Image (cartoon, rainbow, N blue to C red; front, side, top):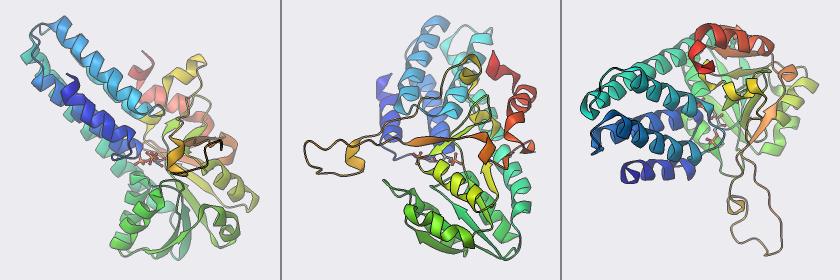
Length: 306
Ligand code: RUB
């Protein structure tokens, strides 16, 4: 089992696969692969195998509810099935995975369709980190003929802003890269801030790449609208029951490879942006005020609370 899951889990933890959506897709594909190569025969063994794979994947990155929700849903489809043999159950995993991925893709399209209307002609946009949902929205707005430019933070310590800026210039979008600490001085030139999300809590707070909450604070000070684009399935149902979203702590060497021995380095990957700083969450159901997100998720994806 570990032979098929471990390389993917490793790629996720090493950020070779990066961004909540890409992580979830890779994890889903890894579970499908596991269900194909497993040697077990009966349903209980098959479920045990899937659960072990799920644990490995979920532990590869802590702050990824989309991945957790996806894997839990896939496994629940097997549990619900009346099939008994591993071969038939592996088909269930495969078709359920396709269904989930199709829905994820449709959500992304829908988010872009709704969100691009917020991009006005000749506007200046600031984004942070690399969110494939944000870049899709910007690329679609550009293809529609809207004229705008984008500022990207470089996003220390691992520079996801470089991925964003490369993707945008490849699509002929005027793009400027800034260091993270330039966000406040540049904010006066910005019309709208758009960022992605890794997790949404029951209170409507958003967890995204470290530094996002600082940008939200700066945007509020400058009275600039701050939007989050996110699939509803990034909602973490555990937060309804009081759990805090865990913030992944990454290796200090990402910040300084050969740091002095006694230096303490802290490297949290994400931070929490409180809902009061967010103008709206642009999701597949529309632009939703963060405090209503729980009801919207409950309406669309009841199963995540089961
Ligand atoms: C990536 C990050 C992205 C979200 C959303 O962090 O914070 O903004 O994951 O991305 P990391 P997407 O590089 O540490 O994974 O919209 O593609 O799901």
